[in-house]
Image (cartoon, rainbow over all chains, first blue to last red; front, side, top):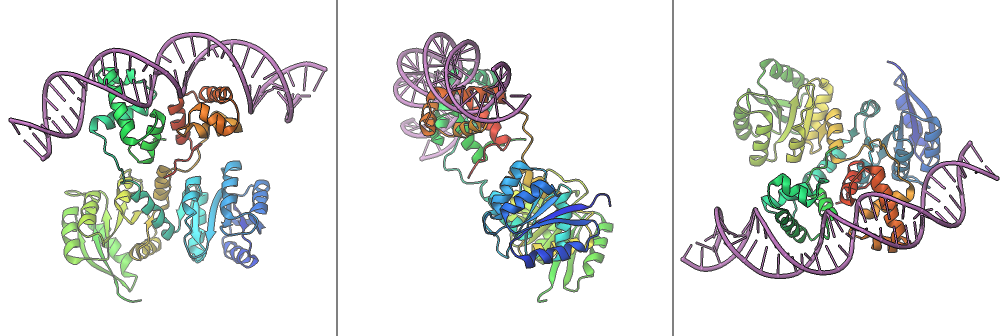
Length: 215
Length: 215
DNA sequence: TTTTTCCTCCCCCGCGCGGGGGATTGGACT
DNA sequence: AGTCCAATCCCCCGCGCGGGGGAGGAAAAA
């Protein structure tokens, strides 16, 4: 092993904190560098200690885990966050993964599994508790379908071009038709999608997965 | 323990099949009910044996794992699928999770971890290998990317409004400033982001996670 | 066969918007 | 004190674009 993994624990229950410390001490290369009992103090501690990873309880007084995680992500995006929560999977997980939380485990996790999860997250991977994963994947699969309107193949093609910097005139040249044709398609697209302008139509298309936003 | 977990193995390499059998035999409540060497035979076997879970190799002759998994999902959606693949994460994983595959592990997985994964999937949860999970989560959008330009707080606020149907005049009213001010901010935003128009700026902002696309 | 849908093309109008100038305030940093 | 920048406001110009019309031909559906 090389450098130790520096860990910060943020939980309002002293018992939980001590328990976590006990578990993490089993690993020689794990080092608990600090503890905090709420999100506000946890945020300060994280910023000054600069740990590799922060274990954060979701429910806490003063500033909860979500708020803290989002704040920390903005100021110190390199610090990984492992969210801890009770036995139920909170709906807030959607916002958290959307914000870039790398880990999410339930408190009834087995110690060995937690160790593995921490190592995975610190090494740049992601770890979501299976139950959480299921929930997130479900949401992913669902949103692929429902579209209340239907675009013709040609319209879909034009819509994809509308997501590019090209003007209608340039799109027309690319497609080998007249500008008026493209504008005509654009008009019916906006009408079908009930969007007021090109920008909104493209955004809506991204939302509906009609267009893929590539990285 | 109650009923045993009935498992079907589908892999074109006999060595791999035997190895899996050896590993799975360690668990008293695991029962390997069948083996198949390609997707077509695996599909038949799955339909007649009705196992709890099928371990499927992704790369196989005749009918590969993806094709088989998708077909099985349609005919017998209650049978869980655990996809096995090499050390690399295949891009096909996106289609597979979208189709409802519950498990996806790499072949270099530790035996104990595979056992855990199988139990998780059979009990209705999902298990993706951490590396796969990372890839999938990236696709659905988190992990803030470094931004080469920097917007002022006010500009970021205006940018968020630019993602709405509002015109600059309406945005100005919302923000309580003159239309010229908003247009002025918009101009510097487009310049900083090197985007030719509002639509492209908004799309780029979505790509860079400066703006969240909500469902 | 009739009807509908899709794709193509055209005209006009007015506003939204991109791009080019510039000016003033106040706060932060030197 | 002087410099820099964010935030506010103003003017002008020209093009892109949204919205309103309409029309013809080909192909698929009724």
